[in-house]
Image (tube, rainbow, N blue to C red; front, side):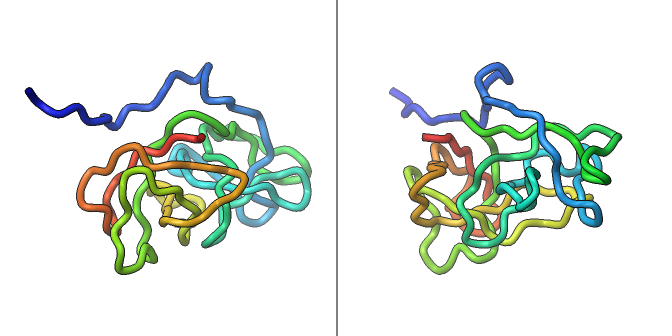
Length: 149
């Protein structure tokens, strides 16, 4: 009998807890669908910014509109729950990521640059994103399916 494996599927938008938000700031902001899926944290002025390395991930960019809010910030949606596909970052270290690991942000690609959210194994305490499946062996560049616990 074949073994069951989680596949790289995400859930429907109604379950993802998507909120509207200002994204980036007035000089560095999300621009288009190239920014979908990037990891973010809350900024200082009621906005979300790219998650810095080692930060607990508060959400992922789900959408970006063409207009701005709050004197120049991008406007879009932030996914705060359920599942998302990310990529093992370059700073994972010598131990490969494994199923059931919890993750934190690794160094993200810049706004306006295509790419998945970069993550690495870590010990978050508040925003618990856990690895459900891995395409590969858990090294840099492998895709991972995350779920918020």
